[in-house]
Image (cartoon, rainbow, N blue to C red; front, side, top):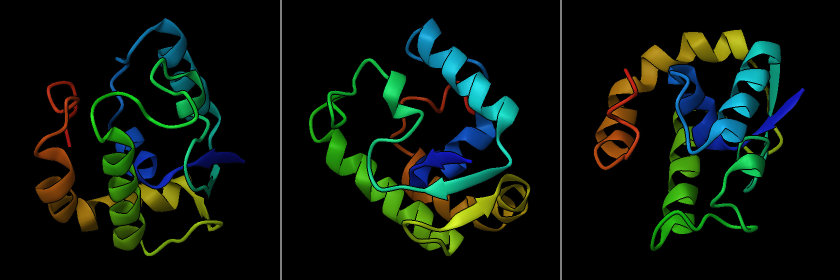
Length: 119
């Protein structure tokens, strides 16, 4: 079982093989190749662990930790999940189309990854 934070439950559905560095990309690819069930965690997860901006919190940009936590909260609200929930990856794939319009309206509008994401 993989441990993932809220926004990764949605964003990983659209991963296209790009990222901060090779270590980060390979970690995501490994997770996606083996994921069946995800447990929702609060804060740093298996994706964040190899991120070069992880120092126990997200340091990607000013206020990035706050922004990431807002994305996590929105993702969990839209998906009807909470910290500690366990969800099958295939069930998430069914839920995403039902919430993607609302997700895009808030999460994608200022996202630096939208140039490589096909939400």
